[in-house]
Structure formats: C-alpha cells, structure tokens
Length: 304
Image (cartoon, rainbow, N blue to C red):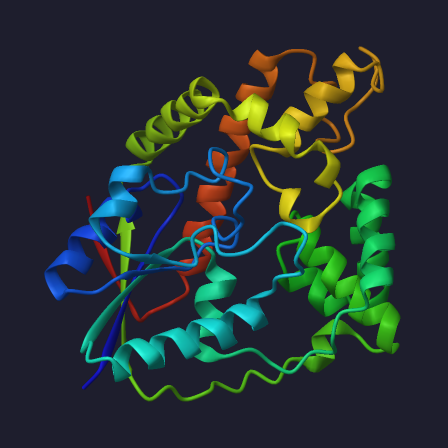
C-alpha cells in the first residue's frame, strides 16, 4: 500500500532534520507543507532548510512560488496531490511530507470545501484595512456577519479574518455556510507523526533561532521586501515586527503611538524590541499549533 508519512509539529521543534532522516530511510524526497517556505523571496525569516539540508535530499514546495502570487491551501491541495501521485507512479512506495501549516496539512489529508473564488480587488481593500485599522476592527465586523466563524477560526490570524470577511461580503452569506465537513478519500495510506519537546526546551530553541535569523541578515531581508509589505505573504511573524520598527525609524509612529501590526504592544522603538516581539509571537504561534493538532487523534506523538 502506498503511504504518505507526514511529519508535523510546532515551529523550531526539529521537523527539517527529522524529515530528512526519514526521507533518506525511505529513499523519498521531502514534500514541504509550509505556507511561507514556498516563497522564493523569503528565506531567513521563514527558516528555509539550509544549503546542506537541501543537498541531502530533494525538496519540493521550497522557494517554488513568488510572493506576488495568490497562493492558497486549496491550490496547495491540488498541486501537492498531483506531485504525490506522480512520485508514486515513478515507483516510490513511501513518501515523506513535513511542515507546520495545519491548514495546508488538512487540505492535503481531508480536502477543502468548495469556497467561492477570490475577489482580488476586495481582498486588496480588506488587506489595506488590516494594515491601517488592525485586525481587531475586522474581527468585530466578522463577528457581526458570521458569529460561527468568529468563534471557530484563529481570529488572531489576519489572513484568515480577511478571507472569511471577503467571502461574507462577496456572497452575502456567512463564510461558515460553505463548510460541509465532507472528507475526501485519498488512494494512499496516511501516517502522521507529531514531534514535540518540553515547553522550556522548545521556547529556548525558538528564542535562539530568532537570534540566529537576525545574525544571518533578517533585517536586510525584510527591507528588501518593503515594496511587498501589504501582500498576504508578508503578514507573517518575523516580518511584521521589523516593518513596525522601520515605521518608527521613518517617523510614521511616534514614541507615544502604536504600531499598526502589534496593537497594544506600543511602538517598536528598537531592533531589540522587534526581536523580543518576534520571539514572543513565535512562542505564541507554536502554542497555537500544538492546540490545533491536539484535537487530531490520528497523530502519533514523538518526543525529541
């Protein structure tokens, strides 16, 4: 029976090294399932595998697309399934997938419901509002239009809020009304392996990885992407906080004001403050990832 082994877990837990080890064991490439590592313009802040790791085994969906593309979990489902079936047809019996994007994993494993196609103009308008007004204003609007989605989606995730609002405003129907919860059957076996570490160990790895990102040139990478700041791909921890620091440096935010990306945190007045926020927000993201997967009874958890 053809099998897909999915290596998942929180950010910085060690998925890359473990997936390479598994891929070498099975003679498989690594199929990435990360919604940010697909973008070729983003490397340091997304913790893309380094040159040695990429050379160890072939990787797919790493630097495969550009930030200017509208890339969704639905598109990933289609492209990843095409790749998986092609690799199986080439003679692979077991394939290895690795990633931390729960929505992409769900799309691949269970399939997505049929949502309306994106309205690019409306999405651009909502993304602009997200930048100017912050996520809280959009969350309140979503709550009035679709209380069910407000109660179930990650309302701290600006992109998810934008997409839900987009569907509500475009169709006049709640975003939640398009969900049918029908699972699509795959013609291969799926095994999920979840990696975890003690919380203090994981948080220390996160903090040290952020410091390494800065040492490796994160600030320059973010600066090179300033022209794309409003795109969905850049609404990402590690980039938003640096952009807020740039705003303060440019005089767009006063010492008494608040940055557009981190309302309530105060202005990002220094690189040290930006790093502190990236570390904190990454730890929060890791916690949300573990909560998200904690509901999945099919995951076999392995402590590293």
